Image 1: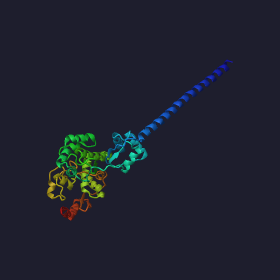
Image 2: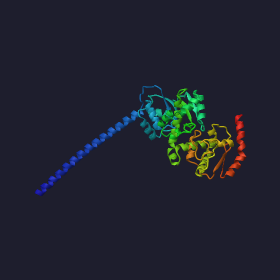
Image 3: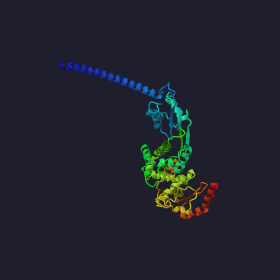
Image 4: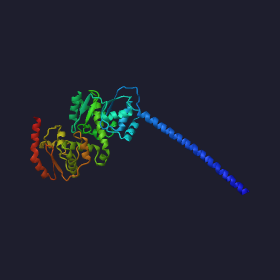
Length: 379
């Protein structure tokens, strides 16, 4: 009897534990269901809050500028700062998930009454684009004096004041603080123009006819920062500093007229560097003399300047022009070449040779073309 009674108690105990476990699991499932429901509710609230307009009744036009090469993160932050969307991070995530991109650079007039879909559509299609009051186009291969002249013609600032601003140490430090990718080398002694090579060649729009000079320069440096950031990993793996890569890119930009020659010329330059040969680049002589005439004469080669690659080995002291992105890519992805020399003709053809005697023969054959070309250009 004792044994049977003990067994009965054991069975009752088991049932009690099962009931308790069932109750606990039911409570846990209830809490989980409530949590999921709350999470779903919060998600839809958050989603609807960020997808909808900030203020459906507000049709005030707000000017937003989207620079060339802006990331979705930067665009989202700008839209949030302007009070057009609730959350810049949501914009970044939403556009990534939806596969939205290819936003058009420019100046837009948007309103707080627009929902996120309408804003994205406007930025993609260029809708509600505000015609800029001023447009400045910097061609590839322009140097600082040429850029200063162009800015002067467009804005009325004097060339001297523009170049002075570009060399102001306090202003340069502000740019370095704002765009950390700018190398310390821009501050070193001996450079003709500190920002040479970092005023990216592109088209820039402004919503006023005469913007602040610092704003004009800033936009060019900002775009340089955007482009260089894209190639930062390759630059680090190149074995050269960013400043050296930009300097070499500027030589490539000046030496090549055709797309297919950029990487070949880069290959020749790297061959010469590896053999401890001088680069012997004519554009560096022109820049050293601050005289950009087409033909370089023999006596010019002796001009003493750290820019002159006929006198000094290695990559010159600094950039000699504003290289475009293709020239930068060429410096980072050169074609493997056996040649050590090249000669560029006025018609754009580049002739590559392996020996100095071959190069001299090409030079003697075509050297008078440049004189004729220059005379025609002057006329």
